[in-house]
Amino acid sequence: MMMFRSATILLAMSSSALAFNIGGKRQSPLSTPTVASPKKAVAVPMDTPNFGVPNLSKTKLDPKDDWVRNLDYDGFAKEVSALGKELRKNTGKDDVDHLNKIVNWRNMAAVFGLATIWLPVNPLTVAALSTWTYASWTMIAHHTCHGGYNRVDAGRFNSRGFALGALNRVVDWLDWMQPEAWNIEHNRLHHYRLNESKDPDLVQRNLDFIRDGKYPQFLKYVVVAFFLPIWKWFYYAPNTYKELKTNEWIRSGKELPEGYDPELAVTVVSMLDPGRKATRKIVNPLDFYKNVVGPMFFARYVAIPGALALIPGVGPTLAVRALTSLVLAELLTNVHAFVTIVTNHAGEDMYTFDDAVRPNSGSFYVRQIIGSVNYDTGDDVTDFWHGWLNYQIEHHVWPDLSMLQYQRGAPKLKAICEKYGVPYVQENVFERTRKTIDVMVGRTSMRRFPTQFEPADHKIADSSLTWKSTNGAIEDESA
Image (cartoon, rainbow, N blue to C red):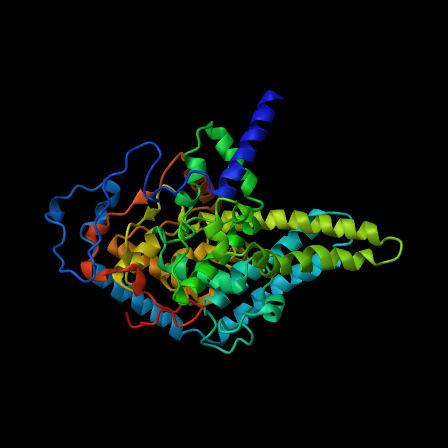
């Protein structure tokens, strides 16, 4: 009983630490909790001559990083770029038919879940409702918002209008995250700042309150387990909204409020922290609860059970069953999403980076590959249950492809990586989950990439990226 009470208190304290971001400014994503971090490699400024790093040939590298020393960045970029152009050129009717197939599978799950939601709570209904939510985000919204179907006539599935605005959000993709906010946070910041300090999804840094926690490691695993089934609405929805509002604030020409740290995560609770007044100037809690999580909460957890409650006699019973199934499905879809999304870029064999490089350069392609991991791939059933996130390497190299083209391009990209000696990591999703959680609790740390070996003309300043639209397209597409 004493152990249970201690664990409960610790869990509550850890929840508060995440909610209010106790501990001040987050540590460097490149640091480790037990070993002093070596000096960071120096990025070459864009407006100064490249004096390089002297005697790179004599610079010691960890044996696991020695492949970097003689990498042909230009040759690698040429082949990767050519393959991307080939895959884009081959996008056509087959891709639309394939998309419609995945949409139909999603719709079947939704219809089954909703048609049986009034029954006594059962695993089939819960799984169907969970799959409805999961597939709507990871496959349909994800690839559509990136512009994967902009080159073909796929009806509503075009990034320039999909899920944008209140009505389209309800029709196309209703989830805890506001689509406009997710487009900023994911399509722009995450994809073009992968595993850098500017990446809002950098697991090692975001979970430093657990990694640095002064309590037994087994309790750290308990804390992680506590957040798995709630992370989308508790953390991801408010943090994506924070990125949207920060972007709007900057674009308006205003200076950020004094004391506001744009890299500090926001949760549904931390925005209410009395000590974070600067955050509330950017993120208005009432606007967040009304416009971001409000629509999902009302449509799923009020409207559906509420409609059943109106049935004379049995209504209240059916409403309770429906609400229970919906809540269980929400917990399940959060875990499913965590296992296949959060684990894409974390683990002791994944790299972090201390500066920025030009999109579509050889260095950019290399970073997307060595900072991402694939799971088992090969057929639609396997890929569906992985949410097509098992092609994360290809997706980060070419964000605007269709699901079908990722299937076709993966073996070819893997062969190019083998030719040039670039690590291409592919493992079972449960093994990746273990490696990710080990990073979260501080048992292991991600690798630091020796960025001084990258070509100097690939380096860019933080402010030199612009986008044509919310699908994340780079303005200088010829780069």
